[in-house]
Image 1 (cartoon, rainbow, N blue to C red):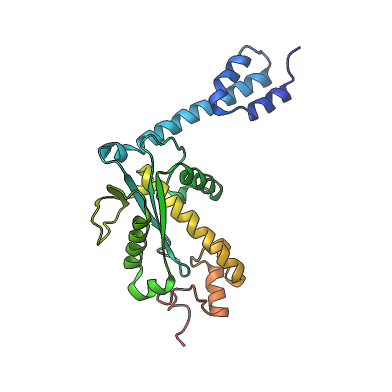
Image 2: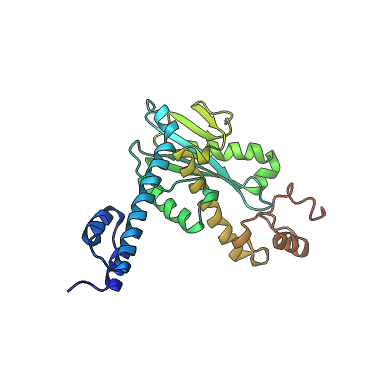
Length: 255
C-alpha cells in the first residue's frame, strides 16, 4: 500500500538536502499529482543548493587569488552611523576548505540567518575576534579613527596572526600585515562577509542588552540608529552614557 501524500510531505520536510536525490528517485514514478508536486519541490531545493554553492565559489575569488598566504583574514565593521553604542569590528580567518553556505553582506541577511551563521562561523573558523570601541572614545578621536582602532584591536586578538588582510574598502593605518582593500567587500569576499556577520551580531546583541537597561530608547529595535522614535526619546529623556555626544548635537543642547 502506497504512502499517503501527507506522510510523503512530512518525509520531504525531514529530508536533509544531501538525501534529496534519494527522495526524488523514490517518488518520481508515483503518478499522483500531489506526489509529483512534492518531487518538484525537492528538485527546486536541489537546484537552489547548487546555485548557492556556485555563488559561494564566486565569493571565494579573492581567497583563491591570495591562496599562497596561509592565514587570510577578512575584516569588517558595523556601527559607524548610529547615535548610540560602540563601533564594532570583526576579524575572521576561515579554513581554506571552508564549506559554509549563505554568507553575505550581513545587512542582506535576516537576523535569524545571521545568528545561525554566527554560530557556524565561530565553530568552523581557524580564528575570529572582535574589537569594540566605546562611544566616549568615538567622541574623543572621531568615528573613522575609532573604526581603525576597533579593527586593530580585532586583528591583535587573532591566534594565529593573519598573513594577509582582506578589508571592506579601507586601508587600516599602523598595521604591518599586507592589506587588500575591496570596495563592497562584504558582498564580494567570503572572509569579509563572515567578519561583517560576526561584527553585526556582536553589536546587535550588545544593543539589545542596553535596551533592557534603558527601555525608553528602543535600542532593541533601532540598535542605536537615529529612528524617529529614538530621536523623540532623546529629546524627551536626554542622552544616556552610551550616546555619542558628537553625533547628537543637532538633537540635544549642550548642558
